[in-house]
Image (cartoon, rainbow, N blue to C red; front, side, top):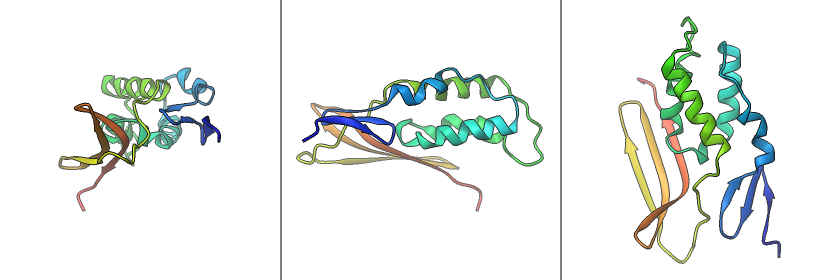
Length: 141
């Protein structure tokens, strides 16, 4: 059997899961978005990796606000901070582990007025290790 390999842009092995560095070199060199179009492109690319970034929708919220219709594009300090945080998360190895089917799973949930964050974790030696993240931002409806 194969013990490790690259699948869908990720290095997969029995012990861990990490982003393939070759696939993300371009992200590391990105400059902050300067208009709505480049913001949309960046968020679209980052969205592919959303399951590997804890609190993804909370981080990208300032950048997502720039995409609102009839809103002037004002790339402020909070947008720059969000861009840098997300960019750093995309170019570092995720802390996700592969599931161990012989120990129990835990599902953690955190909600607020407009956002829900879920994490599937396993506890090993009293330390929680994430397996997957899910985030969802809701609207008033």
